[in-house]
Image 1 (cartoon, rainbow, N blue to C red):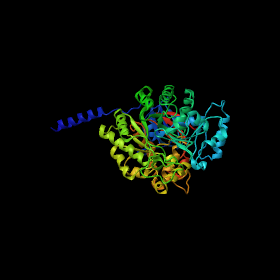
Image 2 (cartoon, rainbow, N blue to C red; image 1 turned 120 degrees about the vertical axis):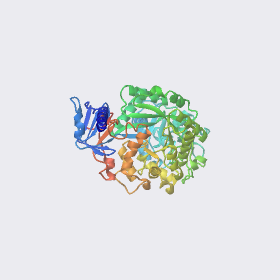
Image 3 (cartoon, rainbow, N blue to C red; image 1 turned 30 degrees about the vertical axis):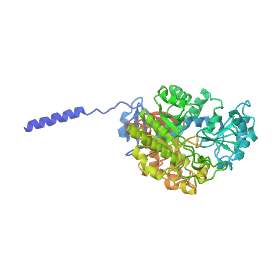
Image 4 (cartoon, rainbow, N blue to C red; image 1 turned 90 degrees about the horizontal axis):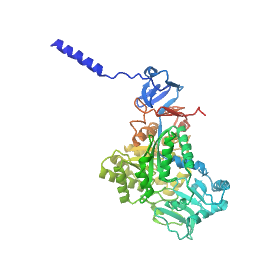
Length: 571
């Protein structure tokens, strides 16, 4: 009996040993060594990559056996390696176009703005050519602008300038004439034509009213669109952004043309990042519906048009277009309509519920623009309606910006599987935040962008730059602002200080959390065997420097799927 038992055990052991997979010693394509590599369990010194996937990570003893004759070995000279960063709300096409148009430095005074516009107009070939550009803010200008301030420097050309938020436009008299806007023109649904005491248009257009003029601006060429996107993608690689969500496809040049631009550039191998595209939709929007239906024509390996963008309100600045649960503290000049008091909810709740339920059933993630707390609540209501109708689909619909969120709505997000998407690049003191403070009052501003409360509620929280609403897409500016809520380098003045979070939490927003939001957490967001080699090499260890120095972190190299797509040492 003992002999039989021993024989069985030997046979079983031999069988198990034979069943164990052999160690894969196939040479790596790339080895990064002499580094400090962040992993979920600590720090490693080397990493090996094959076919874009990490196959080993640890010390040299664990990695160097995978070195072969053709393996590229890179000595990182003790620099830090982190997972690639993700920006889940960015407008790269718009940012690139802003570089090609009449660019007004944020914070410019009225005189400086007029000087820039005059210079831009002087470079045009014909009086029929438009001056198109931005950005402006009322606090920086010193007063609410009007068409006469533009007429005085370039009356011969039609002019349209976006404000920093992109939700208001400032036009001159010539542009109003071309659009046929007079004192008798009624406000379009979801839009406001600002008027003076006599009822004459001032030249300030809010929300959908901007389209009355924008539709007359000459269409952009395909070459211009590709140049703009190419420039922006390079800027993003330089700061370590390896994946992103384009938050409003269709806003710059129409949905189908923008999708075609992405597809053409992807086919040419010019898109390196993993890009999720959100197609803008509104009730009755035939072009948006058509683009959503035909979205898969434009899908590529790293381009996923799998998201729908819905604008629920505007912004809580001097425009008062963000939808708020309680009245604005600021009284508006020459306006006493309901929107001036509580802002604008742009989509009826019943219509919104039906749309989100439909898109959820189609397998499309929905991203809302929701700055005011009433808009945030409407977005959560729609997600809850979709869950009730469809069950949990696995799609993390996200409420974007969330400048203000009612306390009673915080816990709802986790319960219904919703995401809060926040805008940490906007959290430092700035002209646009001065405008928000004046509009809503000092009491409400204490809970502006309540990210600390969001994280504590257990909800998924992710970051979006909203570039080019902000002047830089560099995530290290945002990470420092998440931790300090001050100006880069520190400042006596802060913005929503009580809502600051820790550094590990801030980096998680850009890596682990964003990967989950983008349904790629099995591929990116962390570094370890089996994960994609999407990583960045930086010149200082963010875990070891004072918080006020985080903004001074510089990316030396960026890799996507093991391919070096940026090197600061290269020309």
